[in-house]
Length: 181
Image (cartoon, rainbow, N blue to C red; front, side, top):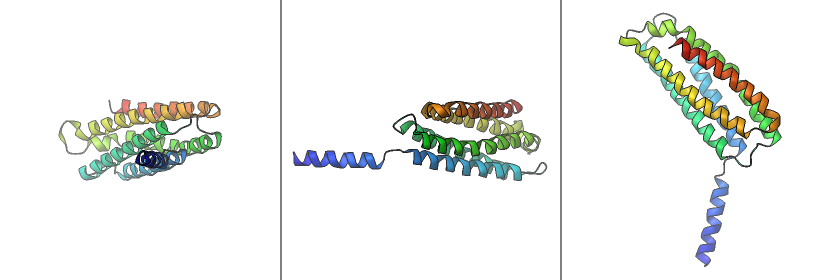
């Protein structure tokens, strides 16, 4: 009986120690912002003429890393309890996402502007533009799940703003996907 009680206490302490909090979500958004900035910088640095395959593939790695950060954030948002987020936490999360929105919008606009540079890379069958499109589709899917999780978890006072950000980002990414279709 003593073993069972000790085991229950230990299990309870471990589950509390590993619980996901809104602080984790805020940290996740900071990571997403960092990854998005890295991708943005790489795309902006890619020359309009004479870019290299190695640089283009490094941007693909940046996109994959961003996708992984988004997946982790989605998982953490879904794991936070209680929901909706407390008003103060929701405000902080919304503010972080609002700061992220122009970075993402600028990044996808840059991706569109660099299409000719990607097409000019000496690879058969438009390999890099196809990879860029696939990255956009994958990131869009991941971001949609993250946005939906955030909107579902938002306090009633933040739902309209979250929905507006989601619509803006979805439209920007849709334009980029269309440009590569």
